[in-house]
Structures are given as C-alpha cells and as structure tokens.
Amino acid sequence: MQFSLFLKKLLTEFVDVYKKHFSSTVKVALLWTILCFAITQVLATYCSYDPGIRAQPVSVLSFFILKFSVNSTYSFVDLTRTLFIFFVAIFSVNLTQKVTIKNIIYLVGTLAVCALLDCALFRLNTQLQTLFSTNPHALIWFNEIVLLLRNYLPLVLFAIVIQLCIGKFNAKHIGFLLIALWLFNELAYEFIMLVRPVLFSLLMITLKPMTWRYVMESVLGIPLISFLFLGYYCAMTAPFYLSEEKK
Image (cartoon, rainbow, N blue to C red; front, side, top):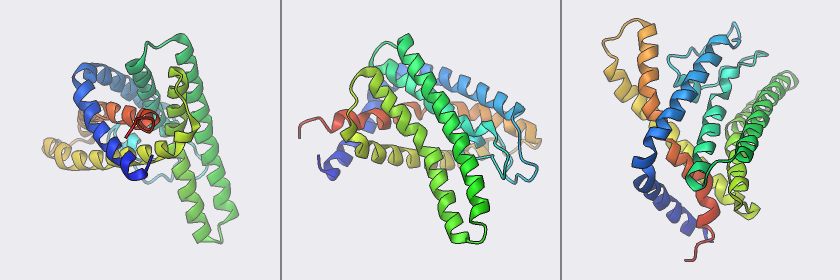
C-alpha cells in the first residue's frame, strides 16, 4: 500500500474509532486510568529520586510527560507510560475479543520485559555519559536515541503482543505501525500540553497551596488520559488491518 493512501486511511480511522467506540468504552477507559493513576502515585511516593533532580512533579500528569531518572538513580515512576500502555493493551484486546488468561500472561510478561528494558537503557545511557564525557555532540546523539527507545519500545512490543493475542500479526506491517505510533504519540503529547496549561491552569488559578494543585490537576488528568485510550488502540492495531484492505 502506498504511504499516502495508508496515511489517509489512518487519519480517517482515528475519527471513526472514536465515533464508533467512545460512548461504549468511556467508563472502562476511566476505570483503567484511575487504576493507572493510583499505581503511579504509589510508585511516585516510594521510589528513589536523585538529590540533584531539577524537574519536580506538579501532578500525576507530570509522570506521563517527563523522565525522573537522573545520573545513576533510576526512578521506577518512569514506568508510568509503560504501565499506561499495558492497560491500553488489555483494553485493545478486549475490544476485539474476550480477554483470556493466556492473553493476560502475555501482556504481564511484556510489561516485565519493558520494565527491564527501560532500566537497562537508562543504565546504558549512564555508562555512555561517562564514556563520551569529552564529546558532547556524541553524548547528545546517544541521549536522544536512548530516550527514543525508552518511549517507543513499549508501544511497539505491546502492539505486536496485541496482534499475537488476536492471532493477526504480520511482520510486514511494522513500518506502518511505527508511523501510526509516532503520529498519535505526538498528537497525544501536544493535546496534553494544550489542555494542561490552558484549561487546567485556568481552573486552578485560585489554588495556592501546591498540595491542592497537585491533587486537583491529577483528578482533572484522569478524563484527559482516559480520552487517549481509543487513540492508542487505533495506532497499535489499525496498521495491521488497514494495509490489508482493498483500495
């Protein structure tokens, strides 16, 4: 399939998926998001942080946007997006067929693999910083590559496992999958960065204590993140069936 045709179908599919499934799945997406936020808050409370960390979380939403592992200290709160994609994967399989114990084992195993890979990539980046400390340009390049892998490997792995769960995986569609994941991931980021400062900040303009701001923005973030479930579902599954459709 030509790239232009696939892109046209993909953008149309994003709209169609929300029109078809949003009303019937919004409650489920909200419940998964609440669970994701609860686990994230536990991780944020009990994980380690480097003493020299500069970025400070202002709400649970911060953990969807920023990485908090610094220097040699790995913070498990960096697994927030991976945990979210894990719940999206369960949500996605359930939209296609009934979730089985076998599916859950595959998805939990993938979550474990992604967690280990994220930690390993962070440790690798730490070693590279020492190795290329005298070459800032190489260091910047390696930092960006490692960050890219930490962001997209979970998306790719879970997308493949979803297809294995529903029995429709075809490796030739990986190129289209990468395009779809990058496209919606960037749209999701820009969507959060638009709503968060423009709408949330307006709603919290009279709140002064940071504790209340943290709680309020976290609560407001639940429907915001839940709205992304169908988009990621489409990005992770559509490339495998759209490219098979006849022109």
